[in-house]
Length: 274
Length: 354
Image (cartoon, rainbow over all chains, first blue to last red):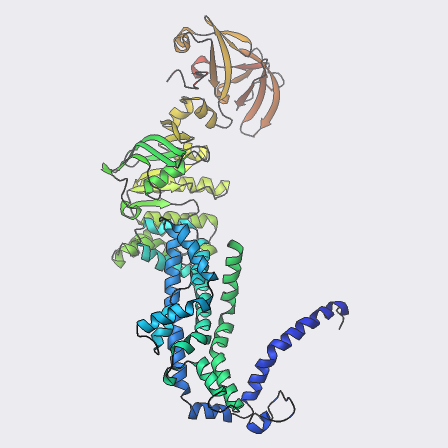
């Protein structure tokens, strides 16, 4: 290597950090392809030799994996879609309408960023319980349909659209919804896609709230099911647990890689114009 | 009658008055130009007519109906924005038919109108381009096209040519007039460019600081400016304005004593001072001039030569000549005809003749 050695030295802590970050992932991937004997070998072998699919077969054949998958998909997609709709509509109002107390409302909405989730657990739980929605997907979904961050990000993006475009549409007698649908949405599509992915990954990975609301195993989402494998139903089935973990994190991972471009753009925009 | 009438229109943002008591009338098929320096309220006026800005007080009548509170979409007004406001995600064709589709016109009619407009504006073949693939001039024509297909009797243009270079601007100006002659809509056109105003307008309304200074044909405004602001705003170089003292039948311009003809003595009445205005091209350079002055600077523009003279009082006068009877080196000053002189009040700046 011809690059100065001193410079490369700075890469050392970075590489170390990457290693620390990646080690559990590598361990998860390799373990999921190992059989029992390989897992309990004394050496930390990162490469399963020979790799086996037996864990995946067990998961798919003996556990209601697809029920969990369906539950998770339903909840995650429902939350994502509605959150996107509410974010876009609220941002639209904040950007293009003048109404009384607009700034106050917007600022108090920003304040919700600072309320820790733990504070909301009790009131939300009681509310869901009174509504009779405990142990249903709706109990998981309902408290999450609006998101301050989503509104904030959508507002930042919409502020970048020249006002003349909206006025041109208004002069053509376009209704507010037509303006939103025909002019604004096509222009904010990259950002909207990006935050949808965030919403989706968040909802997909959520563990604590579903744990409180869902009791029936048939209702479980994948993160809950994952925990089930690790503790109750066989504490030593590491191969199977890792296979489930793999299957759980695969969809958001794929989604992220496909849409990385949009995500970076959105955050850059909010940073520059914020 | 598709006329637009503004009566005592005011616009204020809090304490700041942007348009002050504006009275205007544009007759059917007329091209009115709102002209003024930036910040004079001309764009605000246009936006009030379009309905994009609320009217603080006064009455806006279109075809005899009160339009103050009618939403912009229902006014049936076509507008071209300074930035063109083309939808970047739509093609040229989609941009043009955007409004027609919202109006839910039959698709045959939409096609017919759009194709015709594209043809008039020389855009046939560009239907599938997106705005970012077009040049400035093409974007401007697409914006015009979008306004045209609406076939609205009212046409508002907000500095439509200000983003074009000088050559294109002249071409677009001619085109604009040509198009207006085809459809004859009632047109209000905002600009800060006086050449545009002089060449396009049937009538020019000059605004300054939100107040109407003068309204009239380009010729009237040029030859007979209502006040010193208009006199100084129109024309390159603008009208020469210099202070003159009066004593009985004598007038002193640059310390030169001239006899004021009888006719103008009635105009200036018993004033002791007055502002005299003479167009640079109405002055001539002379060997034995009416007013002596020293040549300070000469600009040769090829077709015209602008000579800057300094009077004995220190005031400067521009003289614009086409044929060079005397070289500026020989000129001892300038002369003029009294009938080409305007007299303005020193205090108010008002033209005393009109």
